[in-house]
Length: 116
Image 1 (cartoon, rainbow, N blue to C red):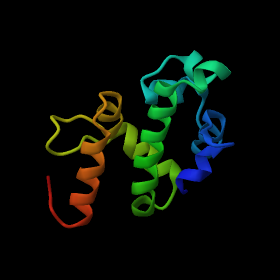
Image 2: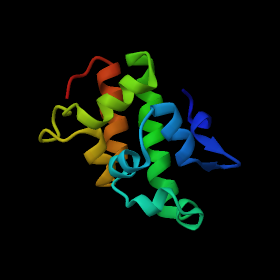
Image 3: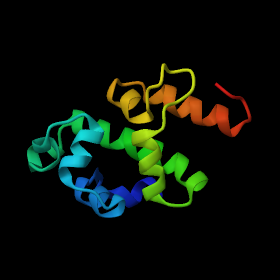
C-alpha cells in the first residue's frame, strides 16, 4: 500500500489503518505508543502528535511492504522483528522513541546490501 491508502481528507485515518492491517483500535494505539483516545476521538486524531506518529508508521510500512508482499506481513515485521544494531529493538519501538529516521535509514541500508 502507498501512504495515501492510509489517509482520508488530507489526514492519516486510524480507521483506514485498522481496516488495511486487520487489527483493532487497541492494537493500533499500542503499536503507535499512544492511548486509545488518540486514535478514536476526532480532536485527538487531528493533533500534531497523533498525525506525526501515524505518518511515521505509514512511511515505514509502505517502505517495507514490497519486501514482504502484503501490508499484514509488513505490520508483523514492524511490531516483532528486532533490528540488527539497535539493541534488539523493533521498528515499532524505534518509531515510538521518535527514531523513525533511523528505521528508514536501516531499511535503505539493508536494501542496498549493507548489513547493520
